[in-house]
Length: 624
Image (cartoon, rainbow, N blue to C red; front, side):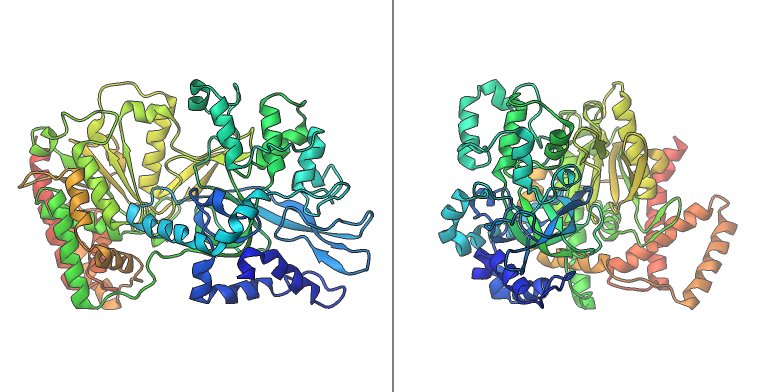
């Protein structure tokens, strides 16, 4: 239990036990805490940091956090160790402040840490998020007794005349390197922290009560935007102390020490209210160090990437057959009994990028479900608000979210496209990445509802949003805007478009399928009710296992496919390399959806039957 309520004591005891003069290792800290976390009983007691629990956790306790890497800031330099007066070495890792004073003129060792901005996983489906939210509430029991005292002592400052050891990176280059984050801010502002530090829940409540209604609605704090106003609720800053590989948009799980620094909130408040003169040093510090009430600081001891939603082998064939049939039935019900469309939508749910070329990503589909202008599917859209998802769009979004761990649904209306950038971009004032809807973790289903599109004019932002969508569909990449250059980031997000007639994004559509419902289309409420009343866990496990299967093509099948291509070209001169690429992708996905890791003639024939049914629907459109 002490490892949870006082993890820094465990860290310092391990450092104290190392040989005199030794440096450059973590003294078994990661090994010690990894061993503790391997015990399910201990891991269940480690409190979970969320938006809901943030104000209830004591300062400097051990916490867990799961989120997506939304930004990777410049490395910071800090005082990693200092020599005490008795000649022993003390560590300053995993903390912003220390209880003991750094002796004047003490020998120090400078170290580096990497700040990561972590945010709650975007577009996460409710069924995937709910268990973790329940676990977060339950985990508070382990620190209930220490909570009030810890919260009251959050962000403890050094005693008068003392200098905390952990130094902010920006200040370390211009100020004394032994200056801590809190003291850096105090020194730069020329003021000390008052009793109302601005970083507690009570302080924020007092400011909200004192602000007028209009001020609260707009964010308060005068004309300047509130610090961190662009960040989602529940984010945190995680500090990495080793060289483990982390990539942008990775989903990670962090175990580390929670740290609050009230001086940061106080300095931000004073800057917003014009309480002190601005300086380049202060601006740089505050830009990269948000109030810990907005983005708590988490000093990472353990960090692991969440590579798969379900760690399981492919289910046995009977289980696959049953789960596949249930998934198809669920999707077909949403689509008004259109079994062919349900098949193609099922393939979207198992699609992923398994190979990349310079120009494209192999493995995903850009699927266009077309509701023709005179069809029942189109008639159902006419009464819907044009700024929101249509009835069918909301139903499809609910169905995808019921089966996939993440689903992003975007209405392609002119107001929505013009409103704001959907691509991430660097804010040169804060030196942080401002996320957009298209900054997504892998395995996110994207639904674009084009049926709400009405007459209007797209501005520059709207046109760039369309271009970003086309690039995502064509290459599974998103260009991040750094003002003077763009940096493309890989994505893995199958895109489904719902349109009336030909899609606005037709040039990047891989598979277009007119809908042919034989029963009334479902609405979002009906889909949610059906999902809530059914046990969908086996279906979700089946889809996750099918999606992560390795796939290969046997040599005899390669020869068969060459013959198939030659024969198809003889029968139809319109069959080209792109057609064969689409067929291969569909056949691979069809095999995966059956729980098979290799292509067979049976699945190839099944794919050709699906494509024949789709071509029959497209023929009347081509004739018209």
